[in-house]
Image (cartoon, rainbow, N blue to C red; front, side, top):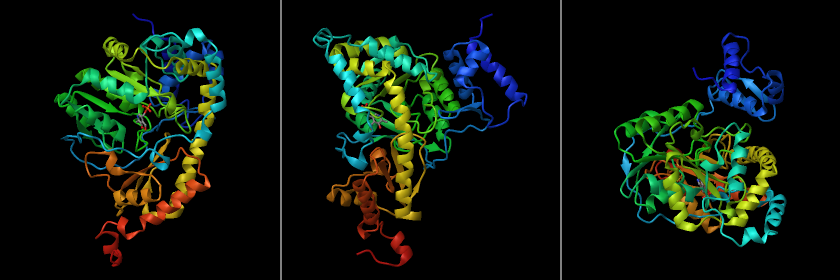
Length: 476
Ligand SMILES: Cc1ncc(COP(=O)(O)O)c(C=O)c1O
């Protein structure tokens, strides 16, 4: 008989006690340090035990307060989505050029970035001529891969340095994954709505999309499974954590089910996980990759949303596709910028990244609330939104508003937003808008939000026959 891992044995004891009614819902559990001392296990085992319990839905983690018994854990939230039957759609041959600025781009305010410490890591790296003026490992500096692996281990997510390949940002990682797993004319399943940048990649690569609707519990796994089982799709591309634009997180059970489906139907799932570490008030959630047993999940991420998009550094853990993925990366570019990789390894290795993320997420939680308060006080009942538990964007529904007109009118005033059309091949999201809340709510941003609210009321931005039909006022 195989011996069970220590963390599972320990978790089993908790489960027994919880099921026997020895713990109440919401009751706090020993800290990691206490758990480790009480049971004479390492901190890593203690963390793995709590992560395992969390993955089974028995506990929740709060970074400030600790671990709690939770018998009703539901991170999926209650985002509402349009319901429809998934079908295959083509994409435009040339994707439209997108606005990259202010409220339109999911990006941190430079004031929130830990520039001083990051600069110090860069300066340390630049002292070594030997490192700077030679080719490095085309798959990525091992010091960076190791630093990333150690960093993720502290979150209960175990991935070896050798499983990771460094890329030029997340989209580069995703593109290589798509090249490997699909060919021109193939259909790729995506959640609806889907981040415009992913639709743009699929478009330039000549792939078709099958938008899978989401329901209250997240992406409709029944429809996704049907597409996998019917061999209608060559791959699936999605974000399971703080999805852009909805902010939506799949539950642990859904992640497990998805990993299992990928294995059963042998369908590659490309997981774009750039927002995972922007978890405002709890530990970063686990990726689908955590539940991947046979390597069907190609896990892609980067530091673009959390730290510095200008570094253009990301990574992929391509699972069973590792050899083919590394061949492609090796011949394509001979690796990524070396000094930046080494600086990032230094920054993460010294513990700055973990400390910085903690502070950043507290700030983002506040900032998210400030934006919601400002918007609701300006627009009252005429908007609908859910508060995301992580990430950088708000997904607003503006019933009766022609958001394309709104976008065009605001652009004349150099105020940039992204309207819902960008996130779908359907017209289901025409009354939605995505706003970045990564910028600090300065007087300038506040005045942009005030203009946003005023321009919404402009007759040109109101869909004829809706609000005006109700009020009896004719649009000018
Ligand atoms: C879901 C998602 N993936 C990837 C990216 C881009 O990542 P990177 O800059 O690392 O290529 C974005 C940027 O908005 C995004 O929202």
